[in-house]
Image 1: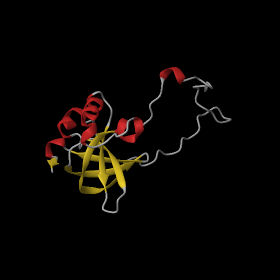
Image 2: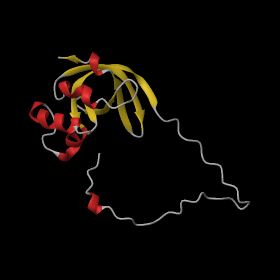
Image 3: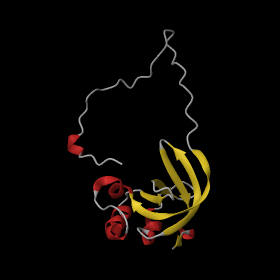
Length: 142
């Protein structure tokens, strides 16, 4: 996640919107799009829900109960929630949290933010990001 000051955005080059053409005047074939979302399996994970903006660096500390009120405010304002998992090996993994249909779950997760949870769902990988497709109605508070 990036926080960008709108005043800092400057156009550096305008690209012609016309489609490229071959010597015969026809449009060239476009490469096939990548497969997209890759499922990795169904899991039960233990962790906590945080807002991606603060957790990924906009605030310190951006996690756990001390950050709960701020995280609730950020998520209710539209910042995507992430499920933060601490592995037994000590590493930390964050997964973008979405509904089983892949839709935003911001309003549905507010009561669970920054509290220890067990979440069951499907992990998928797309665009360099792990996503957890899970039903907030089935989250287990620990």
